[in-house]
Image 1 (cartoon, rainbow, N blue to C red):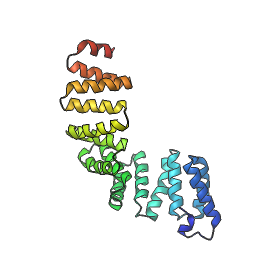
Image 2: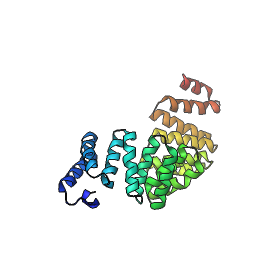
Image 3: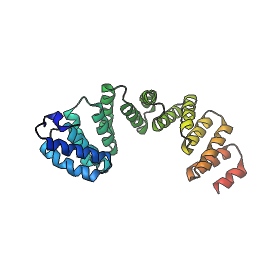
Image 4: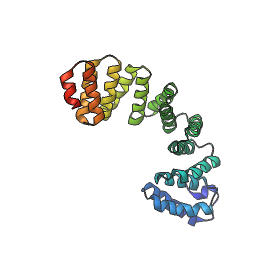
Length: 240
């Protein structure tokens, strides 16, 4: 992302400073990167690359209010960049500006229909605001692009479960478990089996989740399932 690309080829010093900031950002040295970029943005205020990276650096420091104007400017400078719109949308979500994030992600998906990030983030946003039927097509598209994505697979399985499609939810969770055997996946599979009327399988999955991660939530789900099916002594012991 050289500054020369936006018309500053006559100043190799600025380009070196920018490349140093890129290296610092990639190394997680956000304070140092911000220091370089804050100087650069005064010299090249209309640089897409500088504004975009400065926004990402501020976001990396959890300074989302500072990040927002730079990410917005990057989108104005390069409206055809799906990545820039996706980055801005993520920032808007953290700021609680969900309508703005939704608008940016819709445009990003139109610009790059095969973008995993745009599809996943838009689907996840719909899950967050409780519009599950709208979430599913975007999560499905992201799943096709990256079938091994844990987060997207979990979100899609949950959306299937909550919209009454346990068979599809089960298929994805079982696939994810082959790559990553986690308590939260077993807990979700327990919910799926319970929804599908397979109570013995549900108890087994809740038990596995509770043994892998004996958190209050996992123990409560296991005991509650046992209580529903009148396995009272064990349920009471787990509640204790």
